Image 1: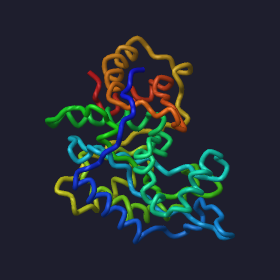
Image 2 (image 1 turned 180 degrees about the vertical axis):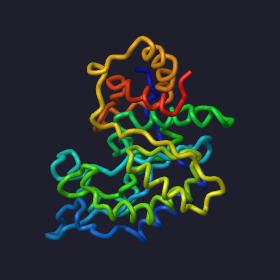
Image 3 (image 1 turned 135 degrees about the vertical axis):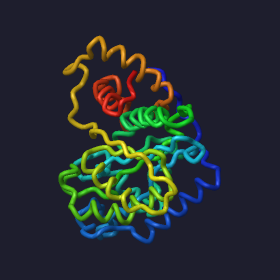
Image 4 (image 1 turned 120 degrees about the vertical axis):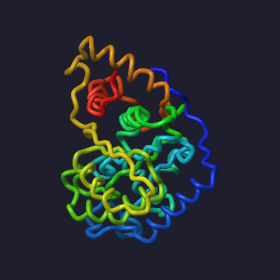
Amino acid sequence: MATKEANSWEPLDSEWQDAQRTLLENVRLKPFVSKYELSACTILRGHKTYLPAYIPYIGPGYFQSRPRILCYAINQNLSPHVSWTQEWVTSWATDVEHARDRLNRAVSQGRAIPIRPYAEGFIPLVALIASLKWLQSYDGRLPDCIDDSVSVTNFIKFSTAEDASSSSIPTVWWKECAQQYADKEISILRPDVVVAFGQRTEGELRRVLGLVADTDCLPVLLGCRFPARIPSVRARPLTKVERALWESVITPLMERMRRPPAKSYHHWKIERYPGYFLDVARAWDVTP
């Protein structure tokens, strides 16, 4: 699969810097939600240290792009049973400023965004499909590289310590993350499209958008299934019609994605799960 190579990350415009600064100020003022003691932590100097909330990754060209796409996954998997997260947890716990801006700093250091469905290619390709949907009604063009133009985060800014599955998230976290973070993110980033991964995420964002009063124009909300427990192409081979759609609609979009760095903790899984993307395209009515 031909994709763009990773390059330097240079968010130089003042609008990007203002957004980053304002979002960081918000998580400094609201670093935790209630029941934060249930979240992932590490032991430093004999005491439990909990990770604070963090701001979205904002592509360096986000504010120069139309449509602006803001994507919400569910929550970050940092539970102790996931071995490859322990280095991150310890690193972020010892540098709170890094923890708050962990997504942008990872990219500035040439690493993959530490949101698994992004690193695996699901979120950037879905963001491109969302761009196609938006362009059906508005002027504009597809971004040359979606990774420079998209913004992405998790709706829930914390991981439960014992079980990182979305079903283990305390109910109160959904409400509090909506009030403390999501509404602020949408007001500051002013997206044209908000993409929600997962049914609960979509429902919560619908409520948030009903309360956001600081945007001149409310974004379009598009929901899709979270990319977990989905059939691979072996389990669900494409039909001739689906193969034609894949080649005419999805394949050209891959040219607008950046190849993950060699040290990325995950690699693209796009071609193993083509049915997922075709389902999204059909659900959003962007197929020919």
